[in-house]
Image (tube, rainbow over all chains, first blue to last red; front, side):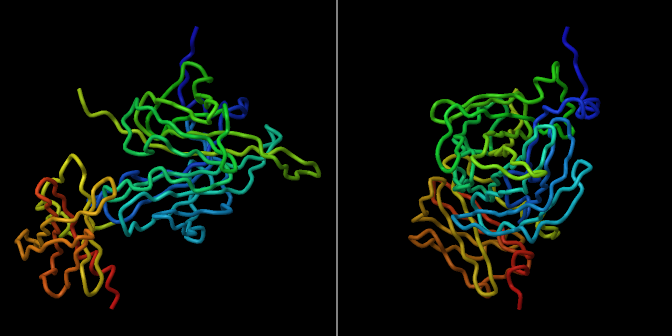
Length: 256
Length: 111
């Protein structure tokens, strides 16, 4: 018999259910800024369990940047400390001077997760288009690990598929595992089984994965792989989980 | 975010953007010129088009041809920009617009 769990109660279960997925998050107030929207975008950065709306500590990132028209600009010093989902996060208001796609990317500090006996580093990014110009939507940043969008990562209808290539050190990762999770902010989504909080798909032999979300809203895709290096913790070498995270917004279908 | 009261009236007066084969119009401004840029969604610059300059009351001030590189420079002191400007680009089959608000001009003109 299936049990339908309210998200409000899920947060209380996290301590007993350590398998819930962690996500680095960069969420803009709008992924498609038109001239009527103004001349800037507001971003919220966090590290969380997005379906349960449960925040975790996001220390000052190692790097935070924006890439536009081939130029990458360091924005680390412009982040504003903020409380996000009851924990440490950051915000940024960024002026959009020209049309095109702006890719915001964050490299966090390694997060020690005792429950997994490993460090977590999620290279996180989000694409924002400005003023009706989508040029640059498939930009590859050259991060340590990265999901390169094959579908335009904005302007998607709900139920559209999203496709991307998982890369590590610039090379596709065959059969990479990709976790998918909904940012349950105000949506009140519930699950019939905890297994459905995080959806999982695998890439094909070329590192290409496909997913179609059941609803509009923000969906996070995290391709997880183990690093080829370790980090010290309490005098021991510990594994490092490298996540390539991309956040994609799907729009509500307006037809009948 | 833009909060100018003039913005609402400017957007109300602006035409509806062309829906297909998207034409992108953008205009940057400094203290001396408005630089209009127009291109198609495939990245190609518009090579032939009329550029209509309207004031904040939607009154046509002038019509000029766009350059073959898809740009046009308009001296700021040649037009009444006190309530902003509406820049319309019309290729004959596609048209779109950009609104230069008073805030845009103030923000980019520090002197």
